Length: 172
Image 1: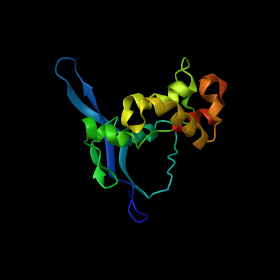
Image 2: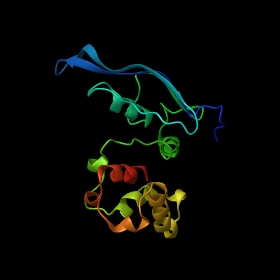
Image 3: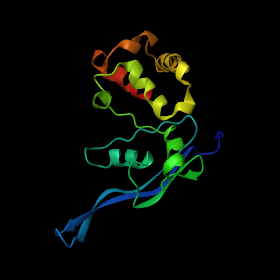
Image 4: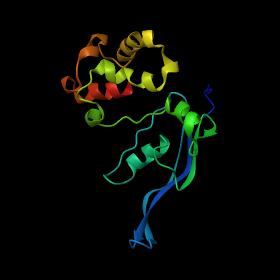
């Protein structure tokens, strides 16, 4: 558990370049797209960071790097003191329980055929240790309440919510 003086997330010298290649059989790198080039920040417990910028400036790439969906070209990402940029398997799965992306309009990431209760409860299938099977429905209702949504909304579908409510569903 992080203390008030200990950073929860430290990003130092974060770089992500995508190689540009030429050739079909013999690929030769002729350059690189510099998607992220030297990002540094530190977040303490209870702090929030918003990343803003024009389209194509690297916001989503930074988020993917933080969630370890992409591997950085250089730099380090330390979560509670541990460098998570090279984790895999169980260790990565454990860290991902604590890190998530929240999109401006998460509508496309919410399955329109699933109820909100099923969407919010789905991570318990991936992380069964977080809530026993018989306890999941109660936990889903609690999570909806924590993010400011009526727990009775568990049987509604994503299209029945506003953009802000959809963000809350994503957070839950």
